[in-house]
Amino acid sequence: MRKIKIIWVIFSMILITFIWIMVTHSDFYGFDEKVFNFMFKFHNDILDRIMYFFTCFGASYILIVLALLMLLMIDKKLGYLAFLNLSLSTSANLTLKAFFHRERPTWKLFDEFGFSFPSGHAMIGLAFYGYIFYMIYKFYHGKYKKLYLTLLGILIFIIGVSRIYFGVHYFSDVIAGFLFASIYLLVLIHFTREYLVKWMKLKTIENKK
Image 1: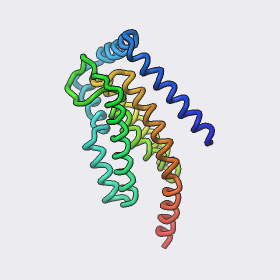
Image 2: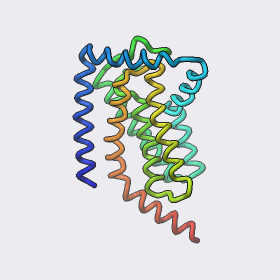
Image 3: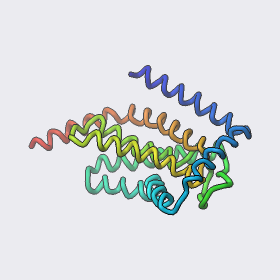
Image 4: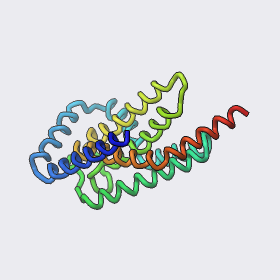
């Protein structure tokens, strides 16, 4: 298992490096534009509203509200962990944006602040919902487990697609965001897995009382 994680990290870093080399050349910029032009063909008022609904789930204010709900309504320790995850992933994304310093697409349909690479919605969204995905996969054994995992997977995917759809990110920004988030999640899970196991054991004991 450890070897698989190491291989995945190395593979992701190679792929991210490849993407960054490519985005500095005009040929890949053309590919990004072609992806947007293809998606632009499907634009209509109804789909715009649907995509905007999903893109909001990657916005910082929604993620903060969700973390707060976890803190107040589910479990304080999980809520604190959600805020820690949100803080770390946001800091990592802002650092990467400042390092790569890539401007947003000129064809964006509405204004967004900050740099473009990697996509914050894609990276932070996967980091946040991906961690919830891991916790459900590892510790939840209810009959709706597969449904929850499927919905989370769809949500993460559509958040990324919505950023390309609205032209606020390049295709390569979103892919890189997902890759960086995958590496980040592996590290986060490695350092918090033991804590989660202890928390789960404690909750099990409390529920039996």
